[in-house]
View (spheres, rainbow over the protein chains, first blue to last red):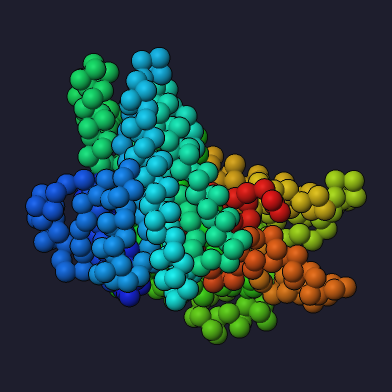
Length: 271
Length: 259
């Protein structure tokens, strides 16, 4: 699929991916490993439940169970990364959930939950690792790289997606602010946001299933077909197509890119 | 295998600056590269350094486009990558001062020239033996979103090509082509042209400082940094990217300037 796979351009670098056990996060982990990086992934599953995936990923990957909304868990992740590697060059704040439905019936509990995972989780990840990224970034061309996973829903609105829209919009501007802060302080850390369109992931499939359960469509495949027909490229994305963008942002080729938005949406927001 | 091996690329305005840097990068990644321009002496140096092929061609010469593309398809059988890079600011000025000749020159090269490049590239890619596939990249600028008062035509052209990119991308989708069209929006890049402007200014150190200060990173981009992004967009790595704006400006447009 990708000719450059395994070029080892990330050899010697250490990456952390939150929500790394599935979807876009897992694709990023796999790509980083293929490029020679060492990767720490976090997710909600127990180490036992993650064992099979970790065994497949190999020795260069390690797992820490962590909830991105918990300060204590982030401290545990920092301790694990520090102990195992002593450095970090790439931070992918990927963990996220969705929320759909009319604003009038959205519960405050649901709203707070999506904000805590999609926004607090990104903030805590960045805050936890800034010192280590600053220290490690000085040694590599282009510096350390933070990639915060937003969405095209952080760029444009969609009906009955208000909570998700708000959370992903917040990630977009949070990323610009920290990019400016690091640049102005001459810290060797870049920060950019990733804006995927519709990607075939467990999150999307579960979301589509919920719409089917609500009677929006007869079956999930109908929704895949509908979204494909509304995407200029005519299909949904594979997670590896997002991982290739994250790989670009993580490495030296994007050394002048900070505070920017990488939109990978098959033309959805061009319309 | 190199990332662009087997791919055939066209770069307009490839004799200097970002164009020449991209020719070099695409060749290094394995592509067969044809580049255009008018400065033959500069072109010879690029050819000698990279192995790319030069064709003397002016992007605004609408009548010569068919021949150029026929020649590429004749010799190589396909076109996979087009980088619409040729640009100028010659004759530009403020809205009060610009002459119609200056306006026509800048709009002719930067907008009409890009339209012709995208049009002919898409027509050629639509005929590729393995179906309509390819990647078209247009060199816009961060000025697409931050206009300059003393360069009205340049600012307008760089904004207009972003709309052109989006329209072309949507059209390609409508036709079920796997042809992608994207824009790159670099900040100030330290090209020979910019270095010349700095050296010729009354106070070169201050001028350099002003250019560098546009980015919170406190420096200009290097040519190879922009070439790296073009190479990425040209490759299959970016095969879900279309209609996009790819900003590489060291955060120049991420915030409010100077605050």
